[in-house]
Image 1 (cartoon, one colour):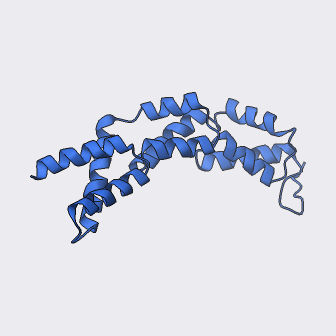
Image 2 (cartoon, helix red, strand yellow; image 1 turned 90 degrees about the vertical axis):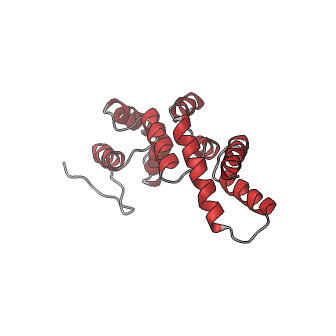
Image 3 (cartoon, rainbow, N blue to C red; image 1 turned 45 degrees about the vertical axis):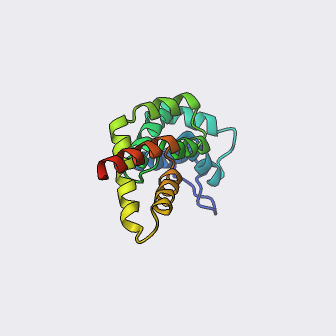
Amino acid sequence: MADHKQPDGTSSDPAGTLERIGKYCAYQERCTDDVEKKLKEWKVSVTKIPGILNVLRKEGFLDDTRFARGFVSGKLKINHWGRIRIRYELRCRKIPEKIIESALNEISQDAYHDIINMLIIKKRKEITKLKTGDTRQKILNFVVGKGFECEAVLNALATMEVKED
């Protein structure tokens, strides 16, 4: 039977919807919340959504743990976000706290501190002809604003200042 499209572009055929949402999940790693929102956007019946989600999980298209790991890795390495910002964003996507903790625990301490140091150096180069106190505060605000813990940034700043003296 042919897949009949409704005027809004959604499929009246549940198998067609499942195929379409499978492609959506295969294109890029998605979390359950992303998929639920997309299905609601496509005006899929609220009663059918749990069944669709179960099929996607069974077939390996949907896995919040895998999503969280990839999200943490990407946001740390590419966007240079700290744990605080990453945790916040995962909570906004309704990822369970246990999964968030597990994914954040996979972050290498050395890599984390290297990113903090890189951000400090980057910001220090951008700031010119200011008093040392102002420079330090601007660097701290910048790195903490990217979601890194204040204590970790202060420790890195102290270590770097000792090396530079």
